[in-house]
Image 1 (cartoon, chains in turn yellow, blue):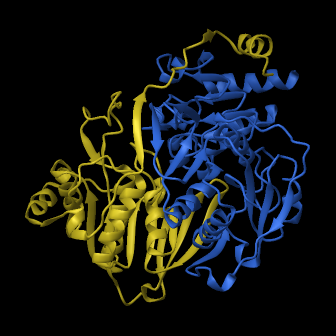
Image 2: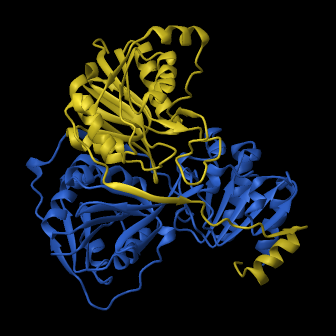
Image 3: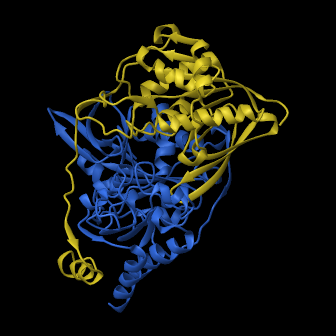
Length: 251
Length: 321
């Protein structure tokens, strides 16, 4: 490929650390926040594409109040060139997120939008596909490999589906959502963190972007689901088989 | 062709995926009538197989341009069909197929969407929906605004529908191929031949974790036990990441959610992301050498010990009957 992609936009969400257990009755506000792990994979992929000389600029994009700037700095410390935070502290649903991203993508006009296939707090797996629908762009979801073809006119993407791997080609501009096995994100280095402090974060409002959204979904309550209780310890294979036959009647 | 709920049916180009039909039960809970929508190429037999489930119509978009499930085209055809039927709910069973395509259709329809709904209930005069969040560690109750909605449901949470004697009519939908988006192209699909049942449909599933060490051991123990029970194989993320099992075997938050009659976990400690995918299994058996492994907290039967010794014994015992 001779002509690098001018701009890749990476959208990311700040989520409660999934390795700390979520608290009931809230979005896990007691846990510390991190970049959604799937979005971190998207950031890493954008950086690798640029490091291969196939892209010029990597722009980060997120939505949230000033508290998410910590995750914006982390993205910049990984190597994102500049970042935009849409200042909005409401509980947004995926469609509201997609409409805000839509406005920002129209402003930035990237050739590729990379983002995680789902956020691990909400587990919706919708925003990327909705954004693609709003833009009328091709989409490649659940992607585990990306290559650019024809001077960056197309991307060949391997997708992880229920039936196994599938390969698609999409014309650019396109939305690519990332699955777990695309890459292993890098750790943030200290010099990276120092450099990130000097990089600009552009803060925009929905109003400035000319987009008005009201979330259409309302979470009434969250509760812990009923827990399965521990059953019986068995001492041997014979005892196990007997239980499965006589008690559980599954054999 | 009018219906209140339009159910998108998934197939593998040969037959309808059975979990797809569990959406009928969800449609019945929503109330009102429902129609099926089938997209692809060469669908005549599959359409016929859908006429005994009480749908007002089986709508078929059968066209070479729809031979592969490309999200841009499919979402366009689905959104058009939804508008033609005057439906208020677009519904499908959760899978990578529906999760790829329906959010895009929802955006085209300007409708909110909920993924992985596990319960529908009427609360204070309004419908509310339950869905797992944060890897299933929490259950959210959600309400929706507006006059239309898109839902995917977990097959495990809604029973397979009973047959219905009234035969549904098959209606062909005209597809204006010239107006369809054309930015996505199918290249290839990995076709893995397996005699084992589909992971999400199997009565018995054997799952393996990283302690199985190598692919040969995984195939011998997990595969061997699965074959002795006519079951499917599954794996943890760690087992898939280390190459012990193919990607589509992954069970959990980001993989498949299963609810078999019997799940046997071999060398699986029980990360919450994995447990999220197995907790609706009727009987869970855990074999693990660590007596403190979290999986024992939810296993129906737990056996502490070395799976390299225990699993061959178990296979032997099952084979002997």
